[in-house]
Amino acid sequence: MRAVDAGERVYANRPFAGARGAALYLGYGDPDPGPEAIRFRRNRVHDNAPFCRLAELDPGANETKTAAVAFCTSPTAALVYELPADAADTVAWFQVRTHDDDVENTTLWRPRRVVIDADLDADNRILGTAALIAAEKRDGGGVRFRFRYLPVRDGLQPEEFQLVATDGPTSPDPVSISYGGSSGEFNLGGGFGRELDFEIDVAGLEDEGEYTFEIRAVNGAVEAALIETDVTADASGPAAPTASIAEY
Image (cartoon, rainbow, N blue to C red; front, side, top):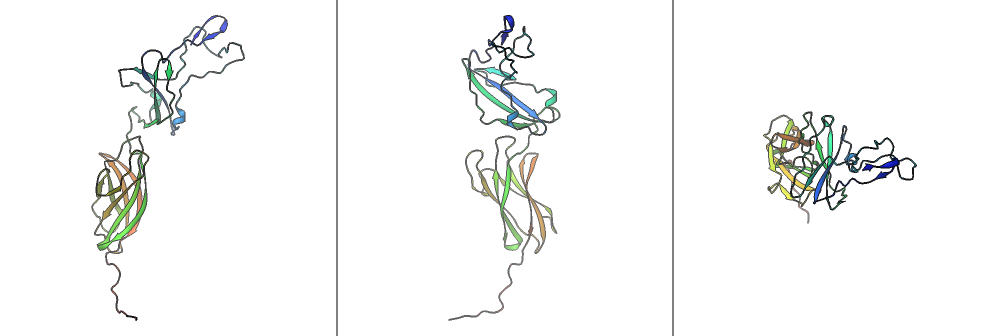
C-alpha cells in the first residue's frame, strides 16, 4: 500500500500480480499454538477518517497487504525461507497458498505442523497415535496384541512397529512387523486419517509371569512409544478334566 496526500491511502500493493505462483505463511510458538497462529494479512487498526487512514503508519512507506514470508513463481516449485532466531524450540505451522493474476487461493486446508529444534532444524518425530484393541493369550505362553494406528500427515511415518518387553521375569526378544504390506497388517485403509489395524505376537513367556510390554513406532533411529500394557502369561493352559459324565 502506498500513502498519498493528506493522509489518504491508496491500496496499490499487488503481492499476487504477475505469473502464477505460491506464497508461504507461518505461525509458531511454545507451547504448540495450533494452526490458528498462521497469519495471512497485515491487519491494522483504522481510525474514523472517511478515507480509512491507518493508525501509526509511516505516510511515506510502502506497506504490503500480505503476511507471506516467501514467494515463488512458476515454473519454480520450491519455497525457501530461513526461520528467525526466536522460532528455535517451538512448534511451527506452515501453509502454502497459490495465486494467479492478482487472485490468491485462500485455502485453510492441510496446514503442516513441524517441531523446530534449538538449531532451527526440523525435529522429525513420529506423530501418529495408537490404541490397544486386545491382548489375547495363545498356546505356550504366547500373547497376540491387536492395536489400531491413526497416522497423521505431519512428521515421520513409521517403517515398522516393535513390541518390546520392558519388565518381566524373562527377557523375550523384541518382535517387529512392517508398517505397510506385512502379514501383520490385516485391515489397511487408504489415505491419512484412516485407522489401520495391526496384530503382533510374542511367544514363550513364563507361565503366570507378569510382563509389561511397549508397542513402538520406528523409523530408523527415531522411535515413538505408542502403547504400554501389562499382561500375565499362561503357558500351562487349562487343567485337564478329571472325570466326564454323559447324560442321555
